[in-house]
Length: 272
Image (cartoon, rainbow, N blue to C red; front, side, top):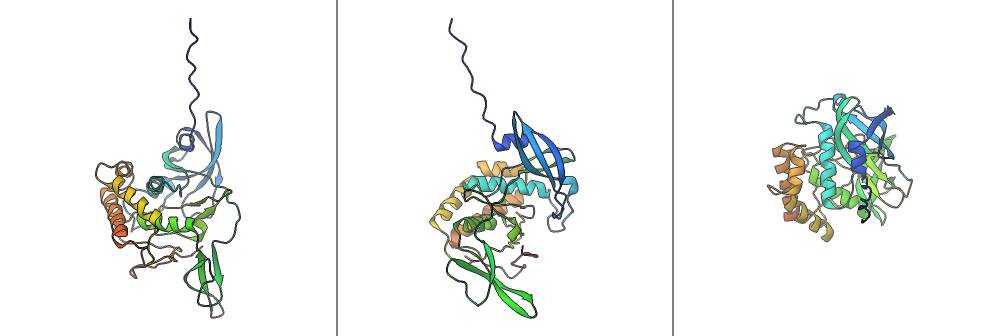
């Protein structure tokens, strides 16, 4: 008699862990504008730290009346995954101790060279991109700049696609090994142009060949019946999916990074 076939144990992915694991609240993140809880999640012998943002703790926003901030955060993760760039930490929508909410893998930040800086003068040094001038007190101004970094440039493209209205400096998380994540995408995907970001340094410049290829892939995925369109359908409205598709088409048609519209504050406040 032959020995029974041995089935290897299933590999537990971060998404499996977040979606299926036992969620335990450890404390509150007080800096957050909406309820954000620091938690641990455990599943099949694995444990990780995470952030849980229950829908019940969201403050209503007049200009984002449809759906929830939690759903938009998950939608941003889905678009990020579709780019292949992995710019948003694993994020799921699930039930938790305080009801349905967004659960996102906690990212430990590793200090590295500055991504943002205030400098004297009217032009940035090599390796930096100008954002604009900022008041620094006593009637003085300084030039706000960000690093000319390909990771930030990819994030600028993602923000343009999802129409991110709140890309602050504190939402940039560099990690050990050189990864860079962006977080807090609850105010994204509006059908109106609300792009508000610190990453304007490439405004009007040609998109990279890599970005054009990625946008082409997103266009395919966002077509009616496309895989990405299907993933977004339960998270944002049909009009918002269509607006996302239109933004991708517009980026491909122009071949350039977008510029501030002048109809909406271009930089979030506070910027950090």
